[in-house]
Length: 493
Image 1 (cartoon, rainbow, N blue to C red):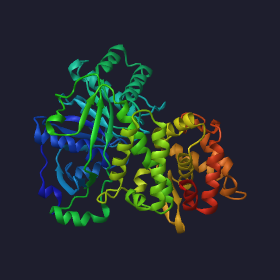
Image 2: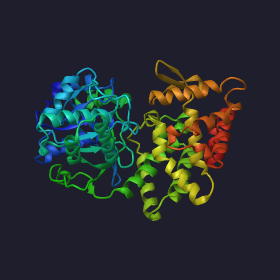
Image 3: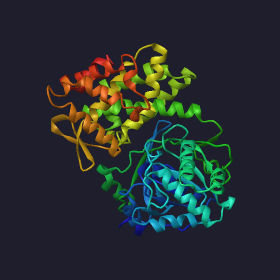
């Protein structure tokens, strides 16, 4: 029996537009909306827009938007496993093949909120975007064109403005999205009345916190038997969840998360919560995973169980990340210990490769602030974070064919390197230029310089930071001469 025969979709007004159909939003936002529908009078569904040309729209529509979340963890010393059939997604539209249907969503009078997760690289400007593109290349470009269509449809009515709650893991994500939308509106000469209407839309900053490994491929059939139906979109996540939403406007009555018992915090300043989460939880992931994966560790749990990698991760957190931060050290240490307990959750298979997606922008957002703050306080580069930067550069050593890059680790085993095509092309060029005479280990200085000096990746020329390039080059040489684990042993000692 498939899921469509066991669970029926529920028709509700489409109140939320969601850019992104991936595992995280479905196990976080859409899971919450499903609970809102059950426990409050919200009565609204989510219509999803696929942000990239290739995605999951067909799979989602084949199941009528239905799927199952499986939450696993330990609470109060007891094992918890929760299954929930999610009915909050009405459909998924692909703007690349269904542009007219996508743009027609702007005419929906019930639409009120927009959520998104287009990764850290998604909220970005693309000079090639134009209003008449079908669709625009960038996410902010798509949003601008969509809002202009809505503005025209409702003749600028202020009660038809939308509220945005982006989930991309960049600082002040709502402010960043708004700035780019306004930029497009001015460059496209859409007029002052539209710009004034844009200003009336709400752009919240938000912070999301839940580990979502996604589809449990290895145990899917066992779960189907347990559920009594086949679900090709099962979404696995941890029990813990937190959504901090920073806004100067009160939307809590429209999205009554508190009445549904959900861990959602409305605030006028989320700075502390964001810094704590991004630099400790997400920073630990990005700091650890490229090196651990190259050592042959495929999940976060394996990283926690491996004595060497576990020591490396703890040293990075407690001796470098936390000392680089402001705020109560006691509270930061308590949070870090909770994070490590969540990482070691034996019921969550969080794949290392899924964490490596867009690692360049992730390092810039999650780890670089700690690295720079440590240098400012201590006067020298931190050992663990510096090595993690070298490991990231080594991870991006691959072969680029038709826009897809493949790397190689132990015994010739290959792995996909997922990032924007521009980043992949630049890394491919760096390695091609330095793979001739003497091999990579003899060209570590030029590889390190080429990677660190490109300000487009890091927001600045990292090769200008004293001692950093030397240290990264030395680590790269150690990685390519002796192996990643041998170099790990040096820095974690």
